[in-house]
Image (cartoon, rainbow, N blue to C red; front, side, top):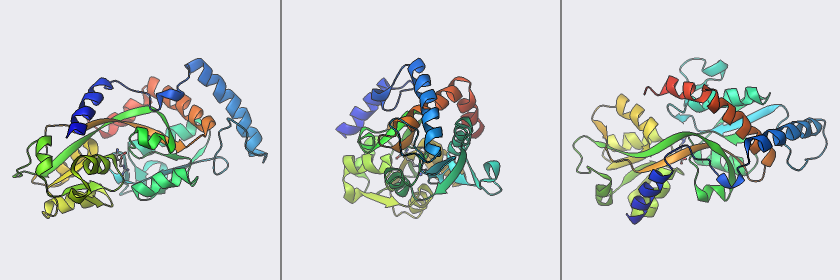
Length: 286
Ligand code: ARG
Protein backbone atom coordinates (compact mmCIF):
# COMPACT_ATOMS: atom_id res chain seq x y z
CA UNK A 1 0.00 0.00 0.00
CA UNK A 2 2.72 2.41 1.04
CA UNK A 3 4.43 1.51 -2.17
CA UNK A 4 1.45 2.49 -4.27
CA UNK A 5 1.29 5.88 -2.60
CA UNK A 6 5.01 6.40 -3.00
CA UNK A 7 4.72 5.50 -6.66
CA UNK A 8 1.78 7.77 -7.27
CA UNK A 9 3.72 10.61 -5.68
CA UNK A 10 6.87 9.82 -7.62
CA UNK A 11 4.79 9.52 -10.76
CA UNK A 12 3.42 13.01 -10.22
CA UNK A 13 6.90 14.40 -10.01
CA UNK A 14 8.05 12.79 -13.22
CA UNK A 15 4.94 13.70 -15.11
CA UNK A 16 6.69 15.46 -17.97
CA UNK A 17 8.68 13.49 -20.56
CA UNK A 18 11.51 12.01 -18.58
CA UNK A 19 14.67 10.60 -19.98
CA UNK A 20 14.89 6.93 -19.16
CA UNK A 21 18.25 6.16 -17.68
CA UNK A 22 18.99 9.86 -17.42
CA UNK A 23 22.39 8.98 -16.05
CA UNK A 24 23.65 8.33 -19.56
CA UNK A 25 22.22 11.53 -20.97
CA UNK A 26 24.64 13.59 -23.02
CA UNK A 27 24.01 17.02 -24.57
CA UNK A 28 22.49 16.79 -28.04
CA UNK A 29 25.63 18.13 -29.73
CA UNK A 30 27.81 15.53 -28.07
CA UNK A 31 25.35 12.80 -28.97
CA UNK A 32 25.38 13.79 -32.63
CA UNK A 33 29.14 13.55 -32.71
CA UNK A 34 29.01 10.17 -31.03
CA UNK A 35 26.62 8.96 -33.66
CA UNK A 36 28.84 10.15 -36.49
CA UNK A 37 31.78 8.36 -34.91
CA UNK A 38 29.59 5.34 -34.40
CA UNK A 39 28.46 5.26 -37.96
CA UNK A 40 32.07 5.10 -39.08
CA UNK A 41 32.75 2.43 -36.51
CA UNK A 42 29.76 0.43 -37.69
CA UNK A 43 30.94 0.58 -41.25
CA UNK A 44 34.26 -0.84 -40.13
CA UNK A 45 32.42 -3.49 -38.16
CA UNK A 46 30.40 -4.46 -41.13
CA UNK A 47 33.63 -5.07 -43.00
CA UNK A 48 34.11 -7.91 -40.57
CA UNK A 49 36.53 -6.40 -38.09
CA UNK A 50 36.03 -7.16 -34.43
CA UNK A 51 33.74 -5.10 -32.21
CA UNK A 52 34.92 -1.62 -31.49
CA UNK A 53 34.36 0.26 -28.32
CA UNK A 54 31.35 2.53 -28.61
CA UNK A 55 30.32 1.11 -31.98
CA UNK A 56 26.67 0.43 -32.76
CA UNK A 57 26.97 -3.31 -32.47
CA UNK A 58 24.13 -5.20 -34.17
CA UNK A 59 23.41 -8.91 -34.01
CA UNK A 60 22.87 -9.15 -37.75
CA UNK A 61 24.46 -7.00 -40.44
CA UNK A 62 22.21 -4.29 -41.85
CA UNK A 63 19.28 -5.25 -39.65
CA UNK A 64 17.56 -3.92 -36.58
CA UNK A 65 16.15 -6.99 -34.87
CA UNK A 66 13.27 -6.06 -32.60
CA UNK A 67 11.71 -8.39 -30.05
CA UNK A 68 8.15 -7.67 -29.00
CA UNK A 69 5.01 -9.30 -27.69
CA UNK A 70 2.33 -8.50 -30.25
CA UNK A 71 -0.52 -9.01 -27.80
CA UNK A 72 -0.64 -5.46 -26.57
CA UNK A 73 -2.98 -3.29 -28.61
CA UNK A 74 -2.62 -0.53 -29.70
CA UNK A 75 1.17 -0.69 -29.21
CA UNK A 76 1.67 -4.00 -30.99
CA UNK A 77 -0.71 -6.54 -32.35
CA UNK A 78 -0.92 -9.16 -35.05
CA UNK A 79 -2.68 -7.54 -37.98
CA UNK A 80 -5.81 -8.92 -39.64
CA UNK A 81 -4.32 -7.89 -42.93
CA UNK A 82 -0.80 -7.34 -44.20
CA UNK A 83 0.18 -5.11 -41.34
CA UNK A 84 2.56 -2.16 -41.49
CA UNK A 85 4.76 -2.47 -44.58
CA UNK A 86 3.70 -6.07 -45.01
CA UNK A 87 5.13 -7.13 -41.63
CA UNK A 88 1.92 -8.78 -40.48
CA UNK A 89 2.00 -6.55 -37.40
CA UNK A 90 0.62 -3.15 -36.59
CA UNK A 91 0.63 -0.69 -33.73
CA UNK A 92 2.48 2.30 -32.31
CA UNK A 93 5.73 0.44 -31.52
CA UNK A 94 5.76 -1.29 -34.89
CA UNK A 95 5.51 2.06 -36.69
CA UNK A 96 8.04 3.77 -34.43
CA UNK A 97 10.49 0.89 -34.93
CA UNK A 98 9.94 1.17 -38.66
CA UNK A 99 10.88 4.86 -38.81
CA UNK A 100 13.75 4.35 -36.37
CA UNK A 101 15.22 1.58 -38.52
CA UNK A 102 14.75 3.72 -41.61
CA UNK A 103 16.63 6.61 -40.01
CA UNK A 104 19.46 4.29 -39.07
CA UNK A 105 19.55 2.84 -42.56
CA UNK A 106 18.66 -0.62 -41.30
CA UNK A 107 16.06 -3.20 -42.27
CA UNK A 108 13.58 -3.92 -39.48
CA UNK A 109 13.03 -7.52 -38.43
CA UNK A 110 10.21 -8.15 -35.94
CA UNK A 111 10.38 -11.20 -33.66
CA UNK A 112 7.12 -11.84 -31.81
CA UNK A 113 7.36 -13.75 -28.53
CA UNK A 114 6.07 -13.77 -24.96
CA UNK A 115 6.74 -10.55 -23.08
CA UNK A 116 9.11 -12.11 -20.55
CA UNK A 117 10.91 -13.89 -23.41
CA UNK A 118 11.46 -10.52 -25.12
CA UNK A 119 13.12 -9.21 -21.96
CA UNK A 120 15.39 -12.29 -21.90
CA UNK A 121 16.11 -12.07 -25.63
CA UNK A 122 17.64 -8.60 -25.35
CA UNK A 123 19.78 -9.63 -22.39
CA UNK A 124 20.98 -12.74 -24.21
CA UNK A 125 21.87 -10.82 -27.37
CA UNK A 126 19.15 -12.48 -29.44
CA UNK A 127 17.70 -9.14 -30.53
CA UNK A 128 18.98 -5.58 -30.80
CA UNK A 129 16.02 -3.79 -29.26
CA UNK A 130 12.78 -4.39 -27.44
CA UNK A 131 9.83 -2.16 -28.24
CA UNK A 132 6.85 -3.48 -26.35
CA UNK A 133 5.16 -0.68 -24.45
CA UNK A 134 8.10 -1.42 -22.21
CA UNK A 135 8.30 0.54 -19.00
CA UNK A 136 11.55 1.92 -17.69
CA UNK A 137 12.26 0.73 -14.16
CA UNK A 138 15.42 1.02 -12.08
CA UNK A 139 15.47 -2.75 -11.61
CA UNK A 140 15.36 -3.40 -15.36
CA UNK A 141 17.99 -0.71 -15.87
CA UNK A 142 20.41 -2.91 -13.90
CA UNK A 143 20.23 -5.64 -16.52
CA UNK A 144 19.55 -3.76 -19.78
CA UNK A 145 19.91 -0.25 -21.18
CA UNK A 146 17.12 2.13 -22.09
CA UNK A 147 16.57 4.90 -24.60
CA UNK A 148 14.89 8.17 -23.74
CA UNK A 149 11.13 7.94 -23.27
CA UNK A 150 8.80 8.14 -26.28
CA UNK A 151 5.42 7.69 -24.58
CA UNK A 152 3.74 7.42 -21.23
CA UNK A 153 1.84 4.51 -19.81
CA UNK A 154 -0.41 4.25 -16.79
CA UNK A 155 -1.23 1.11 -14.89
CA UNK A 156 -5.00 0.94 -14.44
CA UNK A 157 -7.44 -1.45 -12.83
CA UNK A 158 -10.16 -3.25 -14.81
CA UNK A 159 -13.07 -4.82 -12.92
CA UNK A 160 -16.50 -6.23 -13.71
CA UNK A 161 -19.18 -3.52 -13.56
CA UNK A 162 -20.76 -4.88 -10.38
CA UNK A 163 -17.44 -5.37 -8.58
CA UNK A 164 -16.95 -4.52 -4.91
CA UNK A 165 -13.53 -3.19 -5.93
CA UNK A 166 -14.14 0.49 -6.52
CA UNK A 167 -10.71 2.04 -6.01
CA UNK A 168 -7.05 1.17 -5.75
CA UNK A 169 -7.49 0.82 -1.97
CA UNK A 170 -9.98 -2.01 -2.51
CA UNK A 171 -7.37 -4.00 -4.45
CA UNK A 172 -6.11 -5.14 -1.04
CA UNK A 173 -9.42 -7.06 -0.68
CA UNK A 174 -9.04 -8.85 -4.01
CA UNK A 175 -8.49 -12.57 -3.66
CA UNK A 176 -6.86 -12.77 -7.11
CA UNK A 177 -5.53 -9.98 -9.31
CA UNK A 178 -4.90 -10.88 -12.96
CA UNK A 179 -1.81 -9.56 -14.74
CA UNK A 180 0.43 -10.34 -17.70
CA UNK A 181 3.51 -12.31 -16.65
CA UNK A 182 6.68 -10.28 -16.24
CA UNK A 183 5.02 -6.88 -16.58
CA UNK A 184 5.23 -3.99 -14.17
CA UNK A 185 1.56 -4.61 -13.31
CA UNK A 186 2.56 -8.09 -12.19
CA UNK A 187 5.60 -6.85 -10.26
CA UNK A 188 3.76 -4.02 -8.46
CA UNK A 189 0.86 -6.25 -7.48
CA UNK A 190 3.19 -8.96 -6.14
CA UNK A 191 5.08 -6.33 -4.14
CA UNK A 192 1.94 -4.70 -2.80
CA UNK A 193 -0.37 -7.67 -2.21
CA UNK A 194 1.85 -10.77 -2.23
CA UNK A 195 2.37 -13.42 -4.92
CA UNK A 196 -0.50 -15.52 -3.55
CA UNK A 197 -2.94 -12.86 -4.66
CA UNK A 198 -1.55 -12.37 -8.15
CA UNK A 199 -2.34 -14.57 -11.15
CA UNK A 200 0.02 -14.30 -14.15
CA UNK A 201 -1.28 -14.87 -17.69
CA UNK A 202 0.51 -15.13 -21.02
CA UNK A 203 -1.11 -11.93 -22.23
CA UNK A 204 -3.59 -9.23 -21.31
CA UNK A 205 -6.43 -10.81 -23.27
CA UNK A 206 -6.20 -14.02 -21.22
CA UNK A 207 -6.16 -12.03 -17.98
CA UNK A 208 -9.27 -10.17 -19.12
CA UNK A 209 -10.96 -13.44 -20.06
CA UNK A 210 -10.21 -14.74 -16.55
CA UNK A 211 -11.86 -11.61 -15.14
CA UNK A 212 -14.98 -12.23 -17.19
CA UNK A 213 -15.02 -15.87 -16.04
CA UNK A 214 -14.75 -14.78 -12.40
CA UNK A 215 -11.35 -16.43 -11.93
CA UNK A 216 -9.79 -13.11 -10.91
CA UNK A 217 -11.37 -10.07 -9.23
CA UNK A 218 -9.47 -7.39 -11.12
CA UNK A 219 -6.86 -6.99 -13.85
CA UNK A 220 -3.97 -4.55 -13.54
CA UNK A 221 -2.65 -3.55 -16.96
CA UNK A 222 -1.51 -0.54 -18.98
CA UNK A 223 -4.25 1.93 -19.84
CA UNK A 224 -4.05 1.82 -23.63
CA UNK A 225 -4.67 -1.94 -23.92
CA UNK A 226 -7.17 -1.70 -21.05
CA UNK A 227 -9.26 0.73 -23.11
CA UNK A 228 -9.19 -1.69 -26.04
CA UNK A 229 -10.23 -4.67 -23.91
CA UNK A 230 -13.01 -2.77 -22.17
CA UNK A 231 -14.21 -1.48 -25.54
CA UNK A 232 -14.36 -5.00 -26.93
CA UNK A 233 -15.96 -6.67 -23.88
CA UNK A 234 -19.27 -5.65 -22.36
CA UNK A 235 -19.62 -5.41 -18.60
CA UNK A 236 -16.07 -4.29 -17.83
CA UNK A 237 -14.99 -0.92 -16.48
CA UNK A 238 -11.72 0.86 -15.78
CA UNK A 239 -11.54 2.37 -12.30
CA UNK A 240 -10.95 6.10 -12.12
CA UNK A 241 -7.94 5.70 -9.88
CA UNK A 242 -4.73 5.39 -11.79
CA UNK A 243 -2.30 2.95 -10.24
CA UNK A 244 1.16 3.98 -11.46
CA UNK A 245 2.39 6.35 -14.21
CA UNK A 246 5.30 5.08 -16.30
CA UNK A 247 7.65 5.89 -19.20
CA UNK A 248 7.85 3.66 -22.25
CA UNK A 249 11.35 3.30 -23.67
CA UNK A 250 13.33 1.20 -26.12
CA UNK A 251 15.49 -1.42 -24.37
CA UNK A 252 18.88 -2.61 -25.56
CA UNK A 253 21.53 -4.97 -24.23
CA UNK A 254 23.55 -3.58 -21.37
CA UNK A 255 26.60 -1.63 -22.51
CA UNK A 256 25.83 -1.25 -26.22
CA UNK A 257 26.56 2.47 -25.97
CA UNK A 258 26.82 3.00 -29.71
CA UNK A 259 23.35 1.58 -30.33
CA UNK A 260 21.91 3.49 -27.39
CA UNK A 261 23.33 6.79 -28.68
CA UNK A 262 22.16 6.13 -32.24
CA UNK A 263 18.64 5.18 -31.11
CA UNK A 264 18.42 8.24 -28.87
CA UNK A 265 19.46 10.66 -31.59
CA UNK A 266 17.04 9.13 -34.10
CA UNK A 267 14.23 8.90 -31.55
CA UNK A 268 14.63 12.49 -30.41
CA UNK A 269 14.54 13.71 -34.00
CA UNK A 270 11.32 11.76 -34.51
CA UNK A 271 9.88 13.22 -31.32
CA UNK A 272 10.90 16.77 -32.24
CA UNK A 273 9.55 16.66 -35.79
CA UNK A 274 6.20 15.33 -34.55
CA UNK A 275 6.47 11.86 -36.11
CA UNK A 276 6.10 10.02 -32.80
CA UNK A 277 3.06 12.07 -31.77
CA UNK A 278 1.44 11.53 -35.15
CA UNK A 279 1.90 7.77 -34.83
CA UNK A 280 0.48 7.75 -31.29
CA UNK A 281 -2.50 9.88 -32.34
CA UNK A 282 -3.20 7.55 -35.22
CA UNK A 283 -3.83 4.72 -32.75
CA UNK A 284 -5.02 6.58 -29.65
CA UNK A 285 -7.70 9.17 -30.22
CA UNK A 286 -7.23 12.01 -27.72
N1 ARG B 1 4.36 -1.57 -19.56
C1 ARG B 1 4.36 -2.87 -18.98
C2 ARG B 1 5.77 -3.32 -18.68
O1 ARG B 1 6.70 -2.82 -19.21
C3 ARG B 1 3.65 -3.89 -19.81
C4 ARG B 1 4.18 -4.07 -21.19
C5 ARG B 1 3.59 -5.26 -21.89
N2 ARG B 1 3.89 -5.23 -23.28
C6 ARG B 1 3.56 -6.16 -24.19
N3 ARG B 1 3.88 -5.94 -25.44
N4 ARG B 1 2.91 -7.22 -23.84
O2 ARG B 1 5.99 -4.21 -17.91
